[in-house]
Image 1 (cartoon, rainbow, N blue to C red):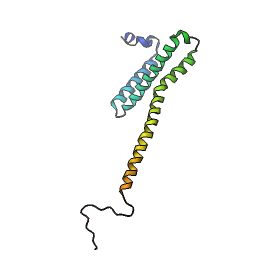
Image 2: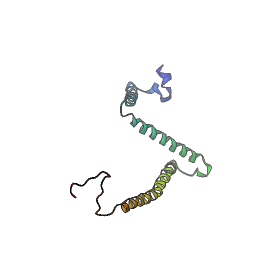
Image 3: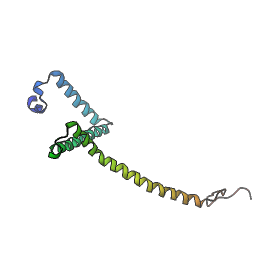
Image 4: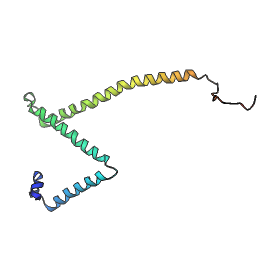
Length: 132
């Protein structure tokens, strides 16, 4: 039965130690899924999804006839660069937007500061001074 379930990893050639290691790994992932630190699994799955996307871009680059002269290493470097383009776009967008936000926040602070007159105490509506 184990031969059919784990046939995709070649379990027939694995030793008892390898089986124990796979079982321990599966147990640790399961324990992490039920713990309060399950958010760490999102980093694990996100990293796997990211690398799967890099592999997909790399295989697309290799399959293009015009890019057949590229070595595997060069295609991985180009695929990593392509995968960083959305991050670069997001950082650029945030940098441009931050200038707009900071200018509006600065104008709002200046308006608030203009409403207060220096050396004038600010009292509540029902303030009654002790001494007249």
